[in-house]
Length: 240
Length: 339
Image 1 (tube, rainbow over the protein chains, first blue to last red):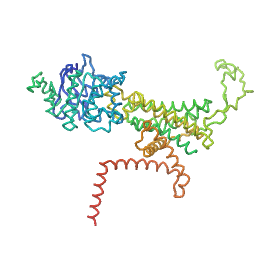
Image 2 (image 1 turned 60 degrees about the vertical axis):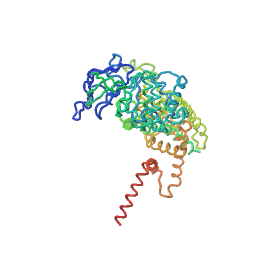
Image 3 (image 1 turned 135 degrees about the vertical axis):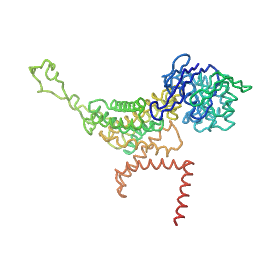
Image 4 (image 1 turned 90 degrees about the vertical axis):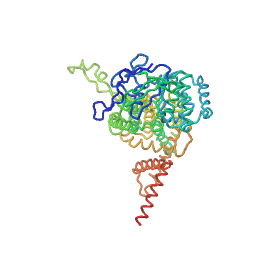
């Protein structure tokens, strides 16, 4: 689905404070995979996600989706089939809008003329499954929810927007252990039931071991480890 | 009554400020220029003989164009929205002088329906035919049809007879805005103001929403400017000075008064705030001299009021309260040491 060929990203190129964030990254993300990306701070994890989203343009190399080069594609166009949830619960939702309005925007992603009534049932059942009682508070402003509730809402919005690829950047980091667990379970459901490819950045090795079927370790902008994980034995078989 | 009328018109302008500052969350300073542009265009249109209703529509449209220019400078050239607003506001100062043909322009009561005649009409031939000055220019007997009255929509008699019309215009604007904000595009606009980067994740361009938001805002400001000029009977190059601050003060006053009541997406708060602002202004002008207050001090007070409200809001947050307590404690202990 997504492919990088010799992808290099250099910040402030030609300036004194030039920094190579990603260096000759070669990898393929296959449809339906659940990939976890781990690595120390400054390893290039978030830059990789930003390249996928079109927010950072590759300095060298190719970024392709379904064989088509996406190097200069605008972020809002790429967003039509890529969903994302970040660490800060406020980034994935619209605090000034009600829960219902947030869900409507998600269901109409990319100018889709989908009627909310068609997805309302699904949205409510997804919210009900979380057990946070959000389904009864559709008229509540999203900004009034707790961090865990906001993040759960963001995940439900991500499902309703029907992405092919979902990018998660430490999306459980700001949550308490119980909320984090619930959000992770929902993440796995999105991958399995909705067949959405997931790329998740995490510092939580417990989650990385428990959920990711493929583990990518980045160090200093280079792929240090890329392997398929056997979820039972938790051993990583090297891909490269 | 005149205060109420003026306050409502100022409130309409503040509604434009509310859209930029509160709904799309872009602090737009074009307002000062687009208000004056609205005023200039409306009066110029009236002078040209265009009906008053069309004149205020033109004022709004020109205001909208100014807003869209700010939006495009901001988004396409990645210029900070404050600077983009200042640039357009500065440009508009010159534009307004050109539109008015001078520093000010009064609303005409009576104008010539046809005050000029073309060369062709006077000479009976084109300029090319008159290359050698053979045609006789008929300047004699040129009758100007004067006396056709350009009807202003306002009576300008300051006895409240214009109140219903102003309320009608404002109600129409609020109803239309509510419908727009409730629709899908309007929801996106509110979402953009609430989380600008988040909107990209749902496949919508920030550029489009920013331009649309600023266009809408300045459409209303331009309309306010046009109405203000027709109501006051003149347009002036400095008519828009300090309008952003006035608008913001009205928005804040309205919000304080209405609190968390959010009918019509809070669109009523700037209108009510505008009336309060105008009332305070006229009270200050009427009785302020007793305490040495001049009408010209009002802008200073308005800005101080905004700073105080922002300061109080900052302190009233729990984090702010804690900081103030710490500061008081520190000062208290320091004073004991110094004793």
